[in-house]
Image (cartoon, rainbow, N blue to C red; front, side, top):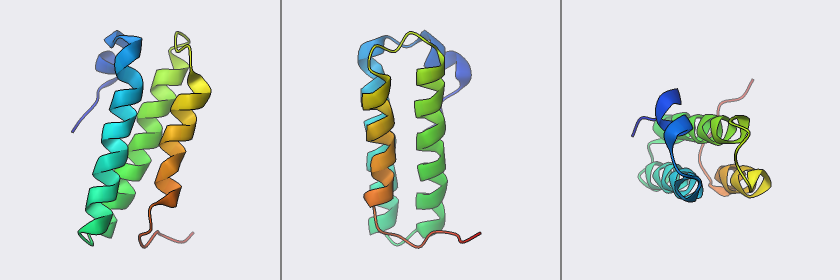
Length: 82
């Protein structure tokens, strides 16, 4: 899955939460398969997608979008330490 800035900007509001949930599901699936590197990458991308949706300034439910994206933190997989 790939989401460009243009695609996010042109999407109807109803699709925003669905998009974030799809990325969340993808993160969960990679973690369940033991592909932690990809799960981490998808987690990062989920947050970027959510931020782009919110940054548009047209999102009626930014806190719901943010809460949904942050659910990736509840998915157990090996994360990189800094």
